[in-house]
Image 1 (cartoon, rainbow, N blue to C red):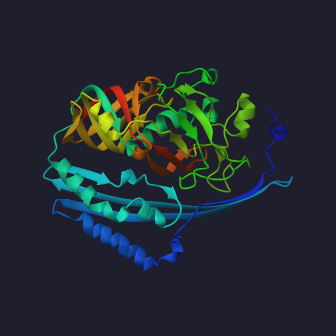
Image 2: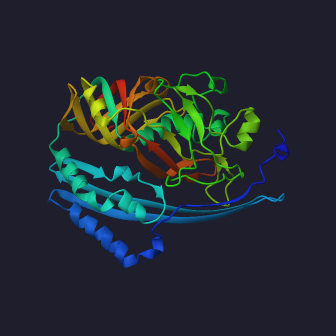
Image 3: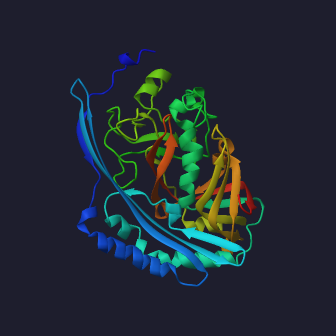
Length: 387
């Protein structure tokens, strides 16, 4: 096709990350003191052999101009607090982290207070020590309750990437892979149970990949991607929309001035349901709660997957019981989401994100946000040991 014929929007506007406590409002020495204090709280036992805290901050300013009057200025502020503790006893080594380093947000230092960063160290240390003497995760088919810091990877890998439109059209075949999703599925395909509602929402101000306009000048709007389990629209920017003759979203993004905009996830969120955590646990006869991703593997069509977590706890007869280590589960995207049994209430929702989503040739590493509640799945293949 002749790409010169595509009528890109000539948007005019501005967007800035909402920031309550700017990065430079606190001195470097004060930031270091805060991290050192958290480190001190992590070292609670001689069996804690490695411990770390860090704070990642980036300012990204962009100006989008077109020859027909388009003028968009965006000022984005990204912050990622990180913390972890590694425990060792004999031949056993276990690690716990602060949300798997997934608490990426937009904003300033107020994010640390919102996430209760300074209060997290003692729990992380205690859980790393508890895993040293925990039994191995059992194997079998059972219910799995996934915490938000594992749900973000499940959404990212088995929903986000498969429905990127350029991937469906074959553009990413050589590097990032293809997709089990085909264009004819949109509007009819039952991607998950009726409890599955996925939205694309770059307008959520605190989330990691929020913006006012994408890098083709399209205004960012919230869109339904999956509603009551049915796949409605792909993650495709203006160019892919014209190529495929399909509606998409404002997700054409580049990692910098020297890269072309391509179809990328932004904030891909699972909308909250009506179940409390207590109700989800009470509804399980035999199952397991898993938290915090530590390993992942998925095939090049984003269908068959295997994920491992840092922390797990058995659920027996409606109650949380034994802590177990090295929990893993596997499944197939095309059927896993149809086994979504309960979706957590908004009280179980966490806003997380990653700065390391890679795609494109040459490669572009970009920021992605995910907001999600806890979710309960039935008939999941669970197994123990290193994934």
